[in-house]
Image 1 (cartoon, one colour):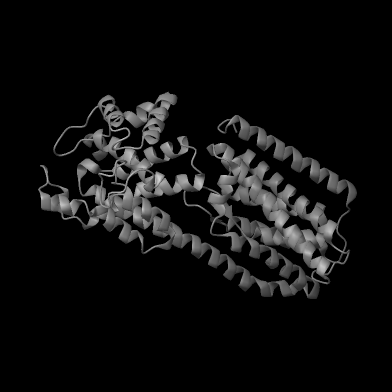
Image 2 (cartoon, helix red, strand yellow):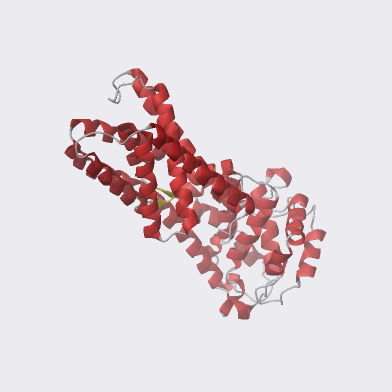
Length: 433
């Protein structure tokens, strides 16, 4: 737990304390659920929730946040068994899943507490709006109770997760929520009617729940396929970009370093997390279009003639055309198309200038220039970091956006521990080794 930031550590303590207090209060006013074979049924629900947690899938290929169908199971348990039993059930399932995944003890305790809080909040909303009937959808008021409780559950649960991840990574929790859950809003909302369906079937026949296994598995598979498709598409584009870099030993891992620089600059400029990730993703594949440039031009050790230069100037356009085939890269495509433009309008391929250029493209231009200057090339040795920074200052307001140059300089100046890593050129020997 000592590895996380102080504010995040305080939030973990707050959530764990709140979860423990809520659970104790609920058992103080609620008894054990009554009914035939209720213990066996609760165990089955706990096992189903545990399996759903273990079988989750990642929402973002660079973050460990996951989405699972345990929400539907826990929501159904809340309506069937009340807050105390369902909160305990959810906490036990979360603990078993985290133990299976061998997560750190404080993550296990935190996840259990967040489940207790989510179930408790949803139960409070459900009981406030419900007409007292145990049958879901028995009245418009009950339907409203389900919708309200579902929104509360999802809001509290995803809010707690986004807050802790945001605090750990230094981002606003709302930005983290948007960046992590965009594209799955509809899928999240479908978990509420799925939980309601479990309750309806339960009241008809407990064994009828077995009939829900197929649609539940199918629902999970559709969620997972959607995210896998996005992840595989992004990794494929990055692999192609790496293949372009590998065509020339001098540019090996160039795109990775430009992406790292760009992300730090965007963060310094206080860009929204979604925009920051878009900039980093664009920087990661900014030279993808060089795949369409002949090796005789791309790897030429000397100066390019006019015809060769004309071919080279097409690589931003080629890269944007490749990315245009993937809807998920729509915003990235624009930045790739403009990353060789200059602030004064003397760049290529479109000759745009000033604020007509997206800020992300202006960020990549600075990061790309610095990385290129501090790396060896066939026609020259790497410049020292001091000389490269002097060149950035010289191009401030002409070739480069002044605020972007200032942000990059600030990143190097305010974080001594990063300055050495960012300023140190990656030599040819380092790349090969």
